[in-house]
Image (cartoon, rainbow, N blue to C red; front, side, top):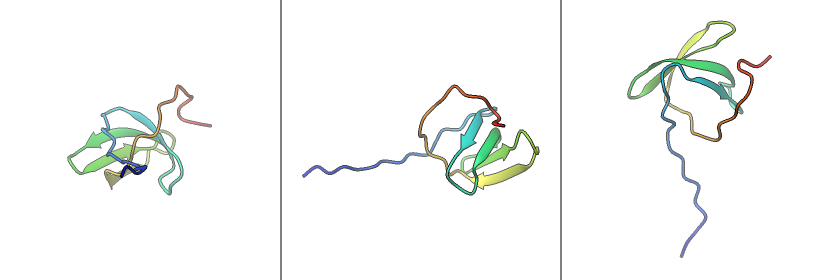
Amino acid sequence: MNNDVTVFTPYPFKLGQKIRIEGSRRSGDWEVIDLSETKVTLRCPISKKEVNWDRFCYFVEEKNMKWPSD
């Protein structure tokens, strides 16, 4: 019997990539500045704050949009 299944896969970040995270405590505009097998380091383009988190994002969509947002 087939069922509707939602499949999540980790997003393959790239150095220098500009991303926007929506709908979580990590929301905002970020630039990918370092990567490891298990971690991603991001920098805010406005405050220059850097954070190092376990890989966590999943692909939703790509958009041609203003970055960083106002």
